[in-house]
Length: 306
Image (cartoon, rainbow, N blue to C red; front, side, top):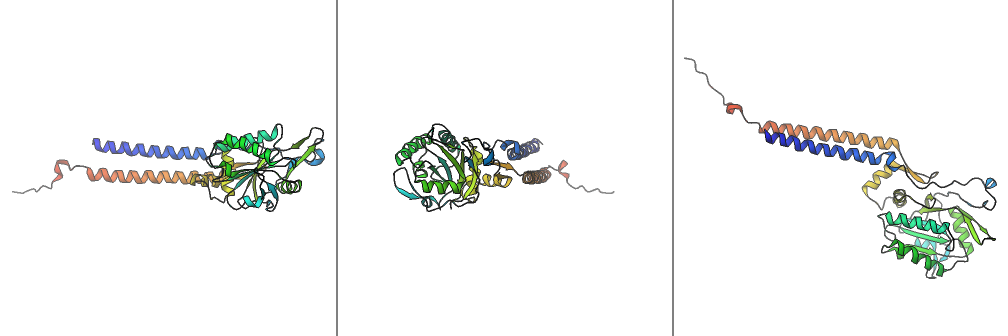
C-alpha cells in the first residue's frame, strides 16, 4: 500500500513540474514579457516641416536595399578596402557615425557596445560590425583610436577581426548614406554634423534587413534581427520558436508578438500536458493493478456435497 502511495506521489510531482514548466514557457512567450523592445526612433517628418538646419536630417528606410559592394574606403590600418570585402560570410551591423562627434555618435557607439556585451553571440564569430565615418575629413588614425577604445571595452577575443572602423572619400560616403537612407547636414558655423541615430542589420550579402533607432538597443530584438538576417544559420531552437511568435515591425524598429501564433503554441502545449498526464495515469493504474496481492490468496475452493 505504501509503495503505491509513493508511486502516485512521485508521478503527481512529475506532472506538476511538467505543467509548471509549460505554464512558464507560455508566460515567457506572452506579449508582456517582450513588450520592451527597441528604443523607438522618431520617424522623420516631411522636409517642409522640419526645423531650420534639419531639413536634410532624417532616416528613410530602404529595406532590402543592396549596399553597393564596390564602394572604396580605408580600414583602421589605412588599407584600401571595398564594402564587398566584408560581405558573403555573416550578418552585419552597420552604423554611421563620425569619430570627432562631441556627443551623439559616442552615445550610439556606447549603446551598441553595451548591447553587444549582453549578447551571447560574439563579434567576429556569429556576426560582424561595420562602423563607417560619414565625415570625409576623418582619417584612419582616428578610426584606429576609436576602434581601440570600443574593442577594449567590449573585451572579447575575435572582436579585432570582426569590428571594422572605416573612413573614406566623399563620393563613397554619399553613395553609402544614400543607399542606407541616412540623411545628415553639415553646419559650417559649429563645424559639426546634424544627424539622426540608428543602426542597421544587414544580411550576409549586404542587403538592409532592419533598422533600429535611438542610442540604446534591446539585446533580445537585436539577437532576433541577426538570426533572421542570417536566414536562421545562427541561434538556437528557442530562437526559432521566438521568431515564429514575433515579427519585426519596421515602423517601430522592434519585434512584436503575433497573438494567433502564441495561442496556437499555448493550445498545443495544453494538449501535450493533458495527453502526458493521461498516459502516465493509465500506466500507473496498470502497475497498481498488477501488483495488488490476492486476498487470502484467492485460491479457488471446492464444495463437496455429502
